[in-house]
Length: 132
Image 1 (cartoon, rainbow, N blue to C red):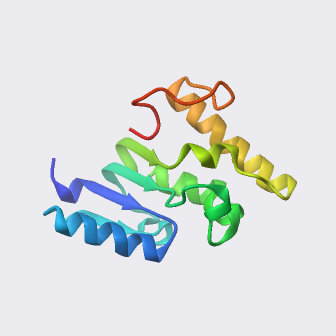
Image 2: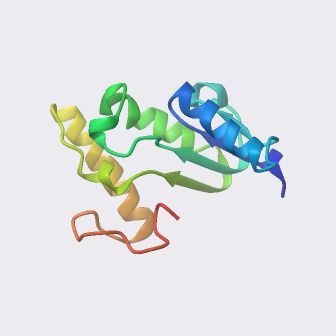
């Protein structure tokens, strides 16, 4: 397995540039990095989806964009073998302003609970859970 077998997906162009720079500095410039739209219809052995926000209060384009179910589905379904979701646990307790935002944060909590067996309501996730 090599860099061509990995896709890194993130919702924001600025985060794409940050990740590309970090990967290039680490000698992994062959890993493709892009937004969800770039990878629609493509697959790789490993897909990494970076939520790129430390909390719901720091989301540049609102939670509705960041946690959109369709975007999340496209990002994670790019993986043939394994998908990683990288994000801050603070996103699981984001303050919401609309019923739709509540559904989206709840959906993220359910995704993390299903993937890890941990519960968002039960306190911190165990080491080695959804953040790796």
